[in-house]
Image (cartoon, rainbow, N blue to C red; front, side, top):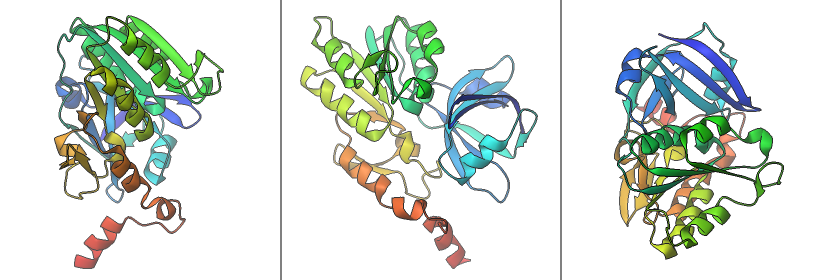
Amino acid sequence: MNKIIEKIQLSELVYQLKVEAPLIATERKPGQFILLLLSEEGERIPLTISDADPKKGSITLIFQVVGKTTHLLAELNKGDFIANLVGPLGTPTHIENFGSVVCVGGGIGAAPLYPIVQGLKNAGNKVTVILGARNKELLILENKMKASSDELIICTDDGSYGRKCLVTEPLKELCEQNNKPDLVVAIGPPIMMKFCSETTRPFNVSTVVSLNTIMVDGTGMCGGCRVIVGDKTKFVCVDGPEFDGHLVDFDNMMNRLNAYKKHENSDHHQCHIDLKIKDKE
């Protein structure tokens, strides 16, 4: 059992939880995630570790309410318990002093991006962060990103805050400079990561993307997170979640994400994987 020691609502559907998990807090590295199980009868979901405090023995989870489990998770409060957390899982982000790094976060993608920004800055990099959201109300982690980077650029679709543009606009401007970035890290909706990768491609700037949005059970057993990277099949949860953005087949990934959209939105939705398991019992 893992106790919730803090709960903050960051925007309309985005919540931040601090949870007691001393062993995970000590071992976690940027880019890694946990598997969360609310109850013995519930489903397990993967969530990126947004931050950790080894001294207090806590980890920070930021999530968006999108389905039944995240709805139930959002109903919990300080003092409540989560049945089980497993982690840290996934391949950690490769951190070293690259020189100049641009980190691009779209929407809830700012949450998994934050520990990577911290790690890259602590390694001696010059870090520029570009944060994008549909409007000011949906922007998260602005102050933390500002404190952990050398420069923060904010973009909103409606112009309610920062620049009225997509994140690819300032990214392209930075790539066009004589001292172009040595590395770009982009995390957010697949369409955003695709166009960030296409923006950096002509400039031959190495680009890393995190495909955590497609993960299902986080162990590699379900096969639901298959993606094509460099014409090879990879599993995001065990081979990633980070890959070379110039090699990812984003169109294939987005088609897979949308394949069961109609069923997922149905009131009678039940996971096809669960049904197959029950059929064998």
